[in-house]
Image (tube, rainbow, N blue to C red; front, side, top):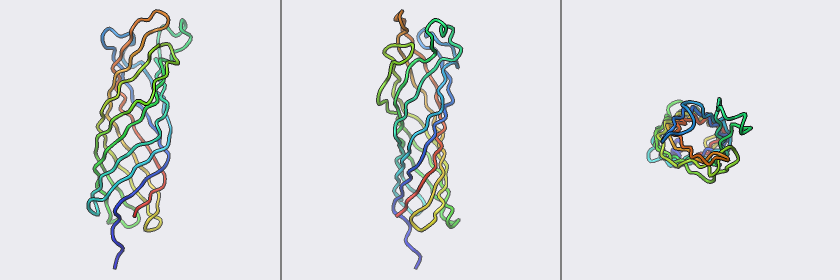
Length: 200
């Protein structure tokens, strides 16, 4: 008899987050469109799923919240302030996914998924030219594609990619004039991860 299909899986590995930012001032904001930049960040990722059927699974994806620095490139006040760093936030998403796993290719088991995430803000750091810097929490739509390569019936490796469609608001007060600043930022990050998979 062939082995029974797995009931659950776990992915654990490295994660890179690559932002595609576009910022628009709101309420007479200070910064013009497209000049807020977020550099790529790297952290640890964890995803766990339960198989409703041998091919369909529901999953929760998260990770260790990284520090994300917001910078205003081309900001005309950089020579005055001595920096273009607006502030830093420790944040990360919790993503719920519905997936379809292809099992007809033997050890190679691709999958695709869609879901909804919520970006959680775990702390704001006013280490730039804004005081009381903060970023709003918000929902995001997520699409996913990846593949497991099973080395044994239970253990293997995986690669995974997610596209997250996310917009939020960032705000603070300029130093030392205390002028309020608020911008609507489209982040739309790519999430790329790889690591070890366990199925049972």
